[in-house]
Image 1 (cartoon, rainbow, N blue to C red):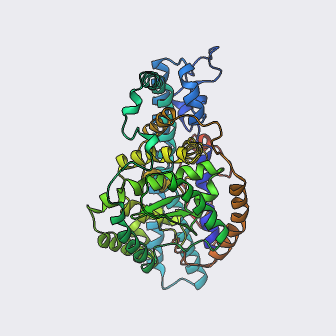
Image 2: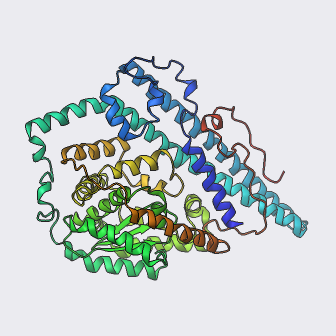
Image 3: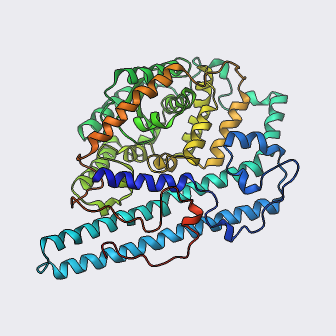
Length: 492
């Protein structure tokens, strides 16, 4: 039942946001841009294109400033309407929860065991429905709209950026950019004394394991060896001066993180989400860049490892003892018992935009230097933002800079790198890894049934909560276009 609850949430949010096009934009964007001979789609339709397509198309498009502004207003209105809708629903569920708890307390002595169980199930389901509304309004819908606005920015701003890049290429001034000495990768120094981080990183790993905050390793040597081989190939062509330790963790989260001293962790969900080796290489190269630039070490100067782990341990204790309200059901929606990657990512690695942008640039250079198609990172990012990953990957977006800045700076760096016609996109080894991964995922999902869960289901045997306003594969514009109404209470 716990697994059913968890899957129901994932299906709801992933399906909703995978189809996030117009929402209620039609209420604000009545005037569509005219179709010109140079462009066959409306402005709104171009926002469904990938970043890579838009980088190519944007210099050829001719939308006016008023059309851009009209679409931007439409996106804002659509976001406000849909976020407001689910905030309203959250408040309605909260009111129903309060009423149900008061009723339970008032009548506790008179209830039969069956009536008590039904009351418990009612509150439990309302908690879950409220948490769905909270994640939709607070995380998933805003993330999806940030992505749409970034693509609008590409259409509006990339042509001028592209001209500037071409001028820098023609004049040779692009060589003077920070870390523009790509022919010296491996012989340059990004940040001195990388070796000083090794002891701290090893201690961090041990402490995470001791506190039970480190997911277990994937028990498949072939998968571990493959991912390590990709990492080692990149490390040899990077500015890393210390040994690299890569571990694949048994977690559905779509994420990866680096601890000081060359300790990289790839979560199983990320392997599931990547479609080719260059995407995986792009993410690994990005994490290696965090190590070469010693970002974790710099962030830790603001907070000691001890204090960080104390916070993480507190959260774990609250979760495992049932104090869900103290941290919100947001974690519960994303993770099973072992899925505390968000705690580690936010508390340990911080949310430094400058560091992420630095790692984007270095990561593109390392992937390129290792022989990979450097656009793999952009393609993976775009897929995460546009098509999937909202439940298991939303933390990835929370810890990263705005989409437009990130995509443009990455594409800019790719443009400055010498093209390699034989750059690796896919490999037979990656395809074999995906085949080997399938039974690992199936086994993990089966074993999760009956295991401790952050959903903290206290009443077994409850009928799953009703989906009062969403059906599988329903477009979001339908979800947010119907009039707001008071939601009926569960179990009534």
